[in-house]
Image (cartoon, helix red, strand yellow):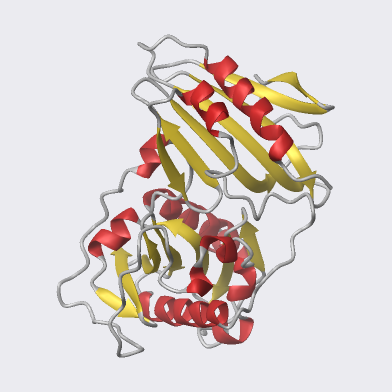
Length: 340
């Protein structure tokens, strides 16, 4: 009986495995701790050196991508699900349906030719601090880094910008098999598609997709919430943090599930940001108390939409009004968001 259950629900098992891998990769959230490099395992010394182009990657100037095609404003418009080309995936088995997570990540939970589970996930515009430091290969003319996890998965990354470090990663979940080879092929094809200006989406007028969260708020609004001594940390394409000695402020734009009753958390309270915008405030205690303010920017379907979240946090020993900081920032940035 146990065997038949596992056969009926391969997608559920793969989702659980892939979620675990995403946490290990350090790309599952936007808190300050996730800005720090995660201690990955070392790639074997005899790993194959990959260079499809035969050219050495160049080092771009600060704040610039290695190529214009990989500029952050262009990557924000890339539809990650369109990068998982079905014909390409058919080389490795039987593709399933694509499943998007947020603006920049997409997965296909498929089977290989023998019916074995094979999970393919691509993420565009991922923060690449560790990957850049350890990049020892080239792929399609870009610096590249690979990591395998316990013969269950391979992460293949390509660096598209160095300061701050950004790139793309293909994650292959494939137990006791060569997961890196399909990862390289999928990533190389995705890079070519972007260079050819493919997989571009046209966002709605009131969408958050095109916004740079670090550049959007006024300096005075940031300093009021995070002090004038803050240091800015972009995270991926859609999140930014400002960190001071006693506090941190995070501004996150995402596409996610939206409950019909807008009840994101049982302990939330509804607040008015002005202009008819209702938001949901959540005050959390503990060793690192925080206060978050969240509101729905737009709905894409019955239960999927675009959400803005502002979070103010700091160690318990530092006394400041976290909710006042989060609400003040939210009210300051709200007028700069696009209207439908």
